[in-house]
Structure formats: structure tokens, C-alpha cells
Length: 258
Image (cartoon, rainbow, N blue to C red; front, side, top):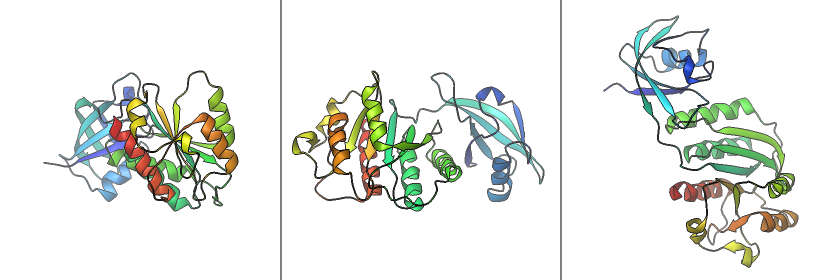
């Protein structure tokens, strides 16, 4: 059986643009054309699954194509069918991530977060954030896209930048309708931190959930005071985890709740 290659389109922004026959080239979906011809070296009969980056309606439709012709200038695809992708979580899960101290660490966390099903990744500065390099949003988008394709996601998660943790939490606290924020914390007020994961059984996730993960140095005292007021704190165990480990474990718990 021919392998199916999955792609989120870039030039084609909604499913109405997907035709019975598609021709990708340097002028239409050039990055996909490059992958198909230079990297994957597809040939007639190979399978391609196309997804639009934004979907309308409740169903996440995948469009299935066969490669019917390929050459140095174009790849021709013919529609063979459609199907509904049911791989998304039943509720919206967001990651509220304090900026780490290196772009490589950020890339790793973003990649694994997408694989675990997050809908949005909100990057915030915090008191102990130590990211000195400029964020490359184009690189992050590429990582998000590749991770979503690899994990057979139906939607392309969103990256949000430019926020400060304190201001973000203060704003969230004022919203009448909001996702509950769950903070992965260590060595905080005993009364404000769940020591087991029973809170997940009691949590109402119908409005979505947001998981907060701090930077390498943890949260400042001022941030901890605000977190106690705005968030549901929970422990990830007796040991102190690296932030990338904390992000994966915390999001994994919520993903398995679905």
C-alpha cells in the first residue's frame, strides 16, 4: 500500500479551494511541491492528504488525492475522497508557556505540545524568563505545521506572542467567560496545590483548559501570589522537573483526560 503524505496548505486557506484536480508548482503551494518532488520523490499512485489551516463548521474534513502526474515543473493530484478527522481533543486545551532560556528548548516544547493536542500556545515573558534571542515566529510556525502533520492533527494550532505573564493573568481574571487556568507549580502554598490528580476528575473542561508552565527559575513570589488567586495549582510529583519535562507531563495528563 502506498504511503499517505499529509500537508496543511499555505496558499489555499479554506476547503472551498480544493478542486477535483489540483496542480502544485512553484506558483501554487511551492513548499508542498518541493516536498513532493525533491524530498519525497512521489510518483503516480502515491497518496496525498490535504488539510486547510482553518476549518469552518464542526467537522474537520481531510481531502484525499492520488498523484496522477509528476515532473520537474508540476505535480498533478486527483481527488479520490474525503473523510472526517476525529483526532482532535473534545475540548480546547491551551498552553500558557513562560519563555525558556533557549530557542531550541522552545522549539522542543512547541513540537511536543502540538503532538499532545493543544489548540493554542501563548508565549509570555515572566520575571525569571531568560530568552535573550529574538523569537522567530516563522520557524515556530514551521515546527507547528510539521508536528501537526506528523501527529495527524485536523487543525493547525495557533502561536500567540507578546504577552507578560502578570498582565495576562490579571486580564484573564476579569473575563466573565474564560478557560480555567491550571498551573504546574512546585513548593507553593500547601493549601493551594493539589497533591494528586483528582482535580482532573472534578474539572469542568467544557469551556476549555489552559495549562501554565513556568520558566527554568520557576515563578517569582509576586507571580506565585497572583497564581494562587487566578489559577488552580497542581503538583507534578516530588521531584523538580525541567520545564520541558513539566510541559510534556502536564499536557499529557490533560490529553489523557479526553
